[in-house]
Amino acid sequence: MRSCLLIIFALILVLFRNLPCMAANPDHVGVVKTMAGDVEISRKGIQLKAQANMRLLKGDQIMTGNNGKVGMIFEDDTVISIGPNSKIVIEDFMFQPNEKKLSFVARIIQGTVSYLSGQIAKLAPSLVRIETPHATIGMRGTHILVKVD
Image (cartoon, rainbow, N blue to C red; front, top):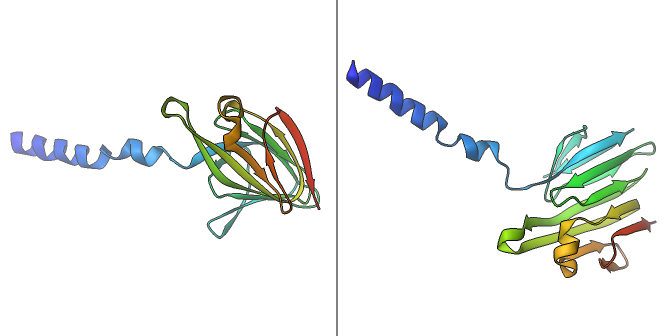
């Protein structure tokens, strides 16, 4: 009986020892808060239809169609909204303020993007970059609107 209980206990330990690691996603950078119309996310070559509360990962490309728009909130409280016919890529995101590891880099490929800064821009403004095909915008303010044709 005792050996049977030990085997069961060992199986439980093996099955559940990695549970917190499986639940946590180190690349999780934010969520899709609101959306309307056609919104897709390209993740590692796979096209996903965006949904409210969908998690965003570093490297995601967010695309809207003719009638699409999406609002996203990032882990540092940054808010990005994109309008119709827009594409943006989350190139880099790191928010570990206790370790002083901060970075936010987004690349706007096309369309209209509204950016409202979060904690990274307040703690380390030089580590926030918005890249466009013709320029890089360094963040010093709190709210910008960018249009890329």
